[in-house]
Length: 112
Image (cartoon, rainbow, N blue to C red):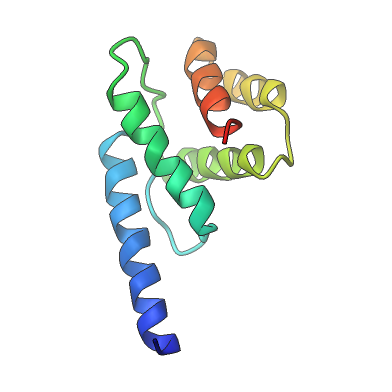
């Protein structure tokens, strides 16, 4: 496989992930959102998990800044740069009243 075709495949996969996550209301794709394939796979699995949970309260990520912030925080949690507790605290500070939603995401993203 050439480097160019590998790049096209990664871009296509990232596009599918972005469309899936945007549809679930979690984040939007931007050029600055380059993540590992493992993180992208886990984020995609999170979307499926949340869609199957009728009690999940959707976090209102309305702006690009909100979505980029959420994506970065989720990636930091996944890579163990922050703890679940820090993720939930940061999320609740940013979005009061969504502690249970952030706890659901934290539990899912920190379990492999």
